[in-house]
Image (cartoon, rainbow, N blue to C red; front, top):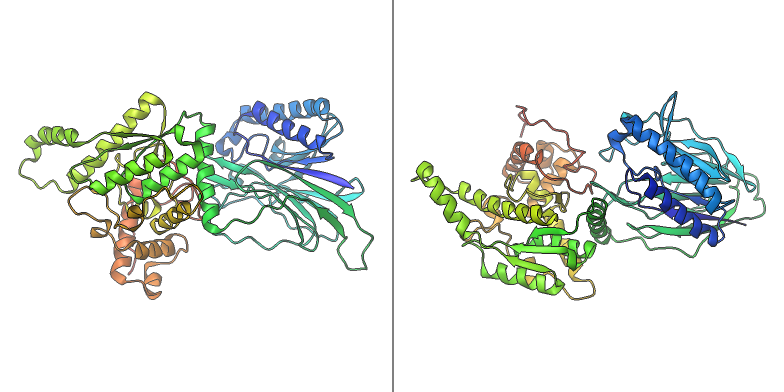
Length: 535
């Protein structure tokens, strides 16, 4: 029998000493439990994705030094244990996304990634060369092959495929069918900037029987016991029995998305050493959900909320904001912006007297709030969370240097209709419903003028989101969307707004990438253009 440990890790990019220690700690725990081999995720040694750090020779040298350090220290702390570690490999032939097997002070490179990722907003071919398919090797009597990332193999040639992986999370994506052959897959967990990594490392036998599934969005150490059964009849797969008691359930779509948001925010705050976060709590749906995510990610003691009412803020909004802060027990402050509104009116009157202010006044209110939050951030070091969603970002229903001012856009890749779904999911969890029913049922409003609702300026969000999803995620043209049954005038307006709002998106804060087409590293449209799309 052979026992293999799967170290589902969340490394910090560039923290080579910390990542070496993280791997060694997992190795010690694995050896105590009787494992003969420990598998780590893709690029576990340096963190993933390193992006342009891979162009720096000093970074690559630091990685090489860390690999040598890990090899030497592992021989002392976990003698005899084999460690399969992912790392960048610089050679005369190029730079490779590689895996090496460490044992007893020796290091053997056993795989280079063959299928480079060009999706997920991260084009690996910009940095890495593609390797050749790895050759099988014998380990404890088993024919094993190591793959970095997903790689098709001939299961008749090997008994076990060991996969080091780091595929970013994509919401609502169906799990691909399990390939033939026995596999153990060690996935990256946690988050790095805009990418969330779901973990959910797994193992299955040659017939697709799942033996191991680790939890999602967190570090974990799993164990698989391998036993080889008698030879099968000709033409059958080699029968290798994989057994484990660790089988975490597959999460529902909204649960997985919510956990990705929590893990993404928690990782960004922790890895960048922010003492806490700030957000404007308006009494609306978006800020309500962001507050839930922030508290679940960081704890109420590290979350500060600020309500900044104007003459147009409804009493219901004040009441609901106060109720949410009380529910969580987080800090809550109120800073009325009426004095700032009057001061700016007096300052601008000589230039704008007699002119209708309209949108100018509305945008000023948003910018007052952004300035107040940034001032508190400057003083405290806390990270300002913006609360805009993907629907608003798509059509530019936001104020540059106002509600877009901040350091992290939690809902940047979540449509408004999905925000409501997630709110209802969060309310269904133990501990009482944190989001007042008023917030979930009242018409959404920016409250920048009397009796305002979002639908004064935009189509119903169900229509807007359906059109934006078809245009962005599915790549359908305006004409095709109209042919699919969406109202022509709504399609025309949304597509025009979307194309005209690129200058705002280009200046927006970092946010989580959760779909196959986000407004982050996936989005590469020019600001200056005159392309006229046919309707």
